[in-house]
Image (cartoon, rainbow, N blue to C red; front, side, top):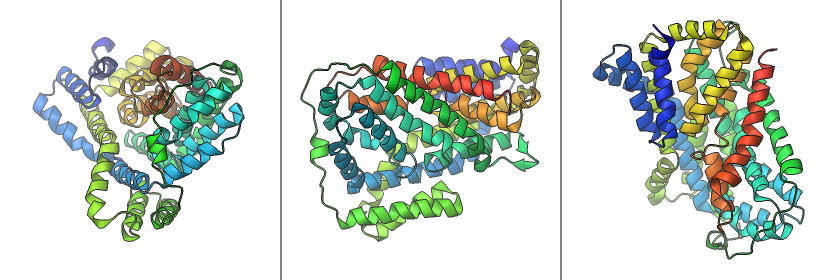
Length: 440
């Protein structure tokens, strides 16, 4: 079988092209899976059956997303996160550099400690634009600060969204045959090496703030809609106190159980029992959580099914062997190819989390065949999945910052968010993963 006609390779190429053409990700995954199946001689009804049977591989992750979305929605409803953001925006100080660092720190908290994701940005950023204008801060640096906080924590900190991301990496490596000392790969194993990628992103942020965008940039003072912020009360209420207790419960349960789904469920239960979520609004909060995270959860389910279809084609080993020959046995070339494909797929899909099951089918056996250690495989898999998230026009990592920074119409999504974050985060991630994977 020619490598160019390999069902797995053709399927991945079709997936990339469809995503880059802005076709819905779910539709792209299904169509590319069916394409690979047909080329392998599998009938479409059989392929659909395999696809659906594979949903179970990521069912736990999807459930975690739903509960986490519900919890985030409930926290947002109480106004606690909004109140904290409003107070922070008032005491930022008059230093542009300090302001950018604080923005990065707040964004980090939104991924790990208080998992509200990008919900804080429309509250916190628009009222700060006037201050940014006074300090003549380059908003491209602000976009990089926010993107860093939305991305780096889940890559290197095994908590909150990081627990989900690392769990997906660990589960998919184990499912595709890689172990560490005969044992299944764990979240702790992933965290042991992914801090290197976090340092790479920190370097990118340092360059963006202190070198690339250090010069002042002038913006016009325009009226900004701050009604969302003005509607937030400064008074600490019972609902806020219950929400704080719920956050503590989420942290405690996650530490004890290492289950984000269970911890998020406990947080929701504390808010319901404490009255922060009125009983009559429980259904509304779950519906809101599904709207917030439901699409990502469904993408994760379909991605698991896609991986099963690729395995069923029986073409993975053939593709790996052909790739090894083409690469000439060079681990350097293999690392470059792995990261480049990861960059392309994630740029199209716009989600690091959803990319992992798609890539793991090919990358794990390829890394094993090329002689990469489990540690190097973890690093390459994590980098390949994360690459493209910063810089993708369809990613929350770029859409979130733009939604706040462009409140007055002076911040371009592509040139002021996507390009800066792509250059300062994807390039360091790629270089570090390629180099370090050769020596661990």
